[in-house]
Every structure is written in structure tokens, then in C-alpha cells.
Length: 85
Length: 152
Image (cartoon, rainbow over all chains, first blue to last red; front, side, top):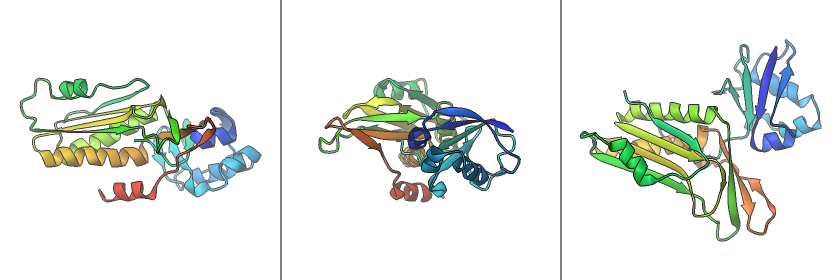
């Protein structure tokens, strides 16, 4: 499955890119699987996602829990806790 | 049910114009509460804030929060505007306006929207230090989660 990943704030800075299309292996089922998979792609991903519990994820622009399946996702946003307002 | 007015923009907003737009032609509004969030200079340590957002999701999430507030507090109108980009100390960042027949619903509605906006709308603040050094991303506060959770 190919999915568009978009990164924000310090996740974007640490990974070093704003977005990318990624082909995911079938073993990546949940949001948590995706975060684990990404950390295997290189030091910059490991650095950005070394504390996965603080990382927030949105599937098709809606907040998603880490145990949610990513099936059907066109766009997955990965970012730190929000600090707007 | 009325739909919230949501905008995400780099430019400033005009508080009075937004209140007028929300109440124009209405005779059932008895209370309007507004909240404006501004950029502080942190006792001179900060020269600017850089506001990053997730385009599309920011608007969608603010709309979802606005709908929840209208439904929960029976608001007659709700406007939420959030700026992005570089914002200097003293400038506006965010505006929430809640209109209701009575004051309690308007106060609660505006408060609710701000509590959820801070914790679920995809915006991030980066500090620019007054000494020219590259600042840090502002860390999320537990107090903001606590403020949100009191509405559950």
C-alpha cells in the first residue's frame, strides 16, 4: 500500500522533509506498526520518532489512536502534540 | 443548527467586524463572548512566534470543535479564526466569538472551543529568541490537557 506521509513541526525538521509517498509492507497494520516501521528507515526517522508515545497521528486529516488500523489511508500526518491557541 | 465560521489565515483579524458579522440581522442574541489570544514577548526574551499548521486538517478540526460547542451549549453563532506564519509580540494569534441567548452559554462555549483548540487543532508554535538565536518548539502543557478533560 502506498500512502502519502506529511510531517509537521519538529518531526518535520528531524526527518528533514515535509512529505513523501511511501510504499508500506503488508506487516504494517496499525498506526503503531507504521511508527515502528519508520524508525527502521534511517537515523533521521529514529531521531524524530524515538519516543513514539508522544507522537500524534492523523489519518486522512482526522486524529487517530496508535492502535487504529491504517487501512484505507490516503494521507497520514505525523506530528508532535499541538501547541496552538 | 447553525454552522461555525472558521478561518485559518496569515493576516490579522478585526474583532469588531467579526462580532458584527456574527450578530448582524439577529434579534435573539443576548450575549456575545470573545476571546483573543496574543503573542507575548516573555519579558523581552522573545522576538516572534512562528505558527505552523496542517492545512486542511486545521480548518476541519476547528470546524469539528465549533460544531461540538454549538451543539453542546446551544450557541446561536460561533466564529473561530487562527493565524499562522510569523507573529510578533503584541499581535493577535487567535479569536473565538460565541453568541448565545444568555451569558453562561456564551462564556462556556468560548472557553470550550479554546480548550479543545489548544489540544486538538493542528498548530505548533516555534519561538524566535530576541538575541537572534534559533528558538525551540514550544512544548505542550499538561495543564492544557487537564483544561480540556474537565469538559468530559
